[in-house]
Structures are given as C-alpha cells and as structure tokens.
Amino acid sequence: MRELHELNIGLALEAAALARTRRRAGVEVAASKSSLVDIVTQADRDVERLVVDRIRAARPDDGILGEEGTSVAGTSGLTWVIDPIDGTVNYFYDIPAYAVSIALVEGDPDPATWHALSGVVVNAATGERFDALRGEGARLDGRPIRVADAVPPATALVGTGFGYDAQRRQRQAAIVQHLIGSVRDIRRIGSAALDLASVAAGRLNAYYEVGLQPWDLAAGALIVEEAGGAVRGWQGAPAGSGFLLAAHPALADDLLELLSPMPIGEV
Ligand code: IPD
Ligand code: CA
Ligand code: CA
Image (cartoon, rainbow, N blue to C red; front, side):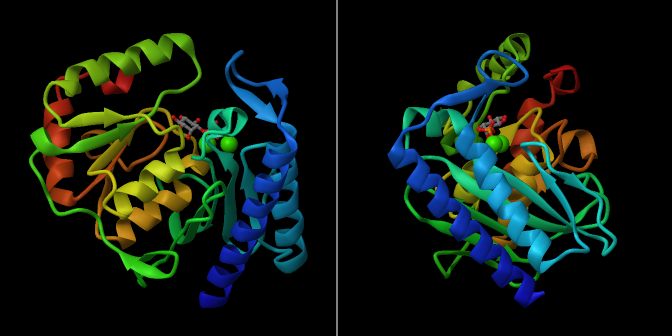
C-alpha cells in the first residue's frame, strides 16, 4: 500500500503543477454543466486526462472514477477517485484555494460502503500537500497533523459549501441561518477537499455540506479520520452525498445535535 500511496502523491503533485501552469496562462470557461454557474474549464478536463493516463499506464486493472466523465470499472477491486480541480470557481477567479484530490478506495466507488486506503489533496495554488495512508496518520507537507481539540459549538469555526442548483442553495442557506447564531463563525472556502484538509490540520473546527459528490470527499474524509477526526452522516447513516460532517468527535456530536431540527434529508 505504501507504494500505491507514493504513486498517489506523485500523481497529485504532477496534476497540481499542470493546473498551476494552466492558471498562469489564463483560464476560460469551456462549458456549463448542471447549471449556468456549474462551470468546467479545459484545464479541469486536461488535468483529469493526465491523471487517468498515468493510472492506466501504472495500474491497468484498477477502476477509475473522475468528475469530468471518467468511469472505468476495474478488476482489482481498487478504484481511483479523482477531482482534478476541486474549487473550479476559485480557479476561474484566481482565488488561491483550489486543489487536486485523489483517493484510492477498496470496494464499490460509493462513499457509503467503500473503504478508503489512500488520500492526497494538493492545493495547486500554494503547493501545500495533505495526505493520509489508512492506519498511518495524516500529514501536511510531510509533518503529522491532528484535528483541533474539542471546543463548544459557540467557539467553533465551521466551514460549509453550497451546490450549484439555485433552489438547493436556498435550502442550504437556511441551514446556515439556523447555525450562525450558535457558532463562532462560518467559512465558505469554495473547495470541499480543502475544507476537509483544513479540519484535519486544525484550521477549521468543523465542516459540513449537503450534496457532495464522491470525488469531493474521498481523499479529504480519510485525511480527517487519520488526523483523529470524525466523519459523520445524517442520523447515523454513513457520510456521503446526502450529508457529511467532519470535526473532532465531541464537537461532531454537539453540531449534529444543533442541526437535528433541520430537514437535512430534504435539502
Ligand atoms: C465544489 C466545491 C465546493 C462545494 C461544492 C463542490 P467543484 O466542487 O468543492 O466547495 O461546495 O459542493 O461541487 O465543482 O469546484 O469541483
Ligand atoms: Ca469538487
Ligand atoms: Ca472539480
């Protein structure tokens, strides 16, 4: 596994370098996806292509699931889950919070049931690298990281995010409205992978979001767990596309309690 994890780190670093080079050359919207504001740039596609080509050459029997359309069913039982640029809107605006996120998971590529083995998140703008190998802890640029100590919700800095569908965003905003008077403050960084990495490094006390995709959370969730954090779903369900909350385990319990009156399942 250590060898595969090193491969993952190499892939993510090379992909991040390509994203950075392409950003310097200038970025244009190539297409809109689920809505007018759900954009994709040619760089998103090219970075995914680069990672997929490298994986196919090195690991021809593995599955691959990538945000920009890659779906390869492998035969090894292992799948690479790729978000080539997480934080595409930041990337488009040149806000330095966009990341390559690559995970290697065992089992079906579904966050509810998979077993994540290796996760790497590289902030392509700053070069910071977060990584975790199952059972071996989490690191930032090679140094071990831990989630922040438990704090009461009132002093917790809580990250969240919003999807691209206008009506869903309004329902997500209602959850923020419910929370904002009970926590220190809210952050909307714009990259789920970096939000999760930030929880792992103690830069956020917690992060939650409704409606993530598998590639948004695959690497970051493992990094949080390996940093001593809890990654929870809604009402005891596994974390996944429905809902994910990441924090120190004690704070996660308190925040879930605070959120309990909200109709999360209908957001
Ligand atoms: C998005 C970002 C954002 C989150 C959205 C994601 P993308 O991913 O992670 O922070 O709030 O739910 O879709 O589109 O930039 O890869
Ligand atoms: Ca994403
Ligand atoms: Ca993306």
